[in-house]
Length: 400
Image (cartoon, rainbow, N blue to C red; front, top):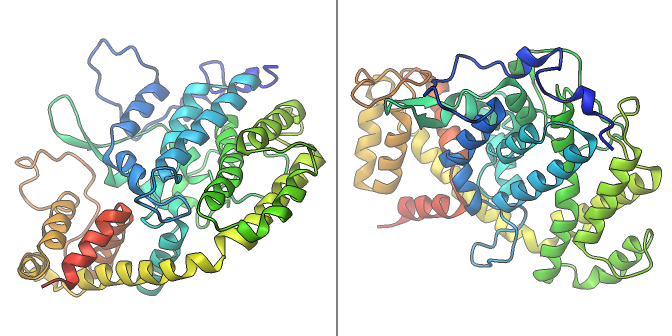
């Protein structure tokens, strides 16, 4: 127990100043009782992007079913699992909590299918892919705004360790023995998911917890929706490979957690036994074969593609150089919801001339005359939508 205590992200860590570095100092009221990571945690959970996670698809688009996992439930599961790992190993649980609640803040509506659709658009128009880890970092750095004590809106301005945990969290890992990288890098250097290991052991905990949290929970949802009816025997045989009795998601999580904590060390990294690692990867393969690529999901993907492309194309057609804002306003004659909501979003991120009146002190992120910037803005706008709002906007576009 507490095998990693001397490597924890705290004031005794030789990298402490780098770990807690922000782009600029946070305002202080002089009586704040919270640590740097506690402040990050509360800034995240008070952001609108975090609140919207409760209406975003995790795997299954099922907005009317209260028992199907949403993105915010997944985030909560990751927070719980990473806390258990970090607490047992002697790491900083305040940091794992902050990274966990923020790690999926960049996810688009409609889950990974929505992410793939936006990436297709981004590669076509911006010549670079869209991926939620990078989008999450850019959201907390540039898009999400909070009021300061003077009621001016500012960027979240999180610590380096939390920002690093967001862009480094990719849960699609197949390696065993995860260790943090030694280099303190500019996080904008990331060009694809999982390019670098996280900078802290705490972020490594979140990365592993991400995978532990979803493989069993996705099976639960698939069973609830009847997707695995023909494969339950195969699933039982797979899971019995480590236990003769009937098991469920909590038993699977406990087994993987216990195994990870027992086998991990600073020398070997965060690692599972060969048996547990094989089981986890076998379950993941089962999920891809029988859940993520199953026939039941394909019709919804066609609908997601229609919805997201129509929203993007409708807004993109409004670009007209210096007349773009007028073009967007004119859109309200046929699509008032889209026009009003996009204008409210867009005007916060360029030099509109009345930023003091609008009480904005955030980073100016877009050039209003740039078609590339306009396309980027549309993608940020769409990626922040909930499933239901994206559908409402689409219906607004096609309605009469």
